[in-house]
Image (cartoon, rainbow, N blue to C red; front, side, top):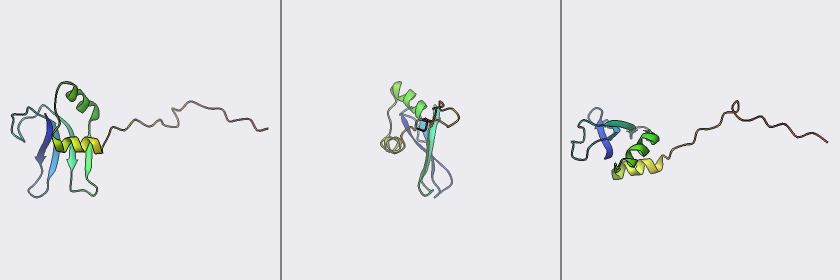
Length: 95
């Protein structure tokens, strides 16, 4: 299962998004950390490893309802093509 594990000081929540066996305790030993969530910033900060989440979902892991909302709100972004890597296009000739 992929769910939140709470870390941080009292009254200062910070969450790790972890892959963990469903029967384990919330902050028990996890298999892998696949992201973080900080609700205290404005707006809330979410960092996800989308390729690892997709990998674990392919292996049968389910998302908790909260993590599912976070993944939907923060979809994977395709890498932008920089200008130096873009193919050179000749300028049209002036008539």
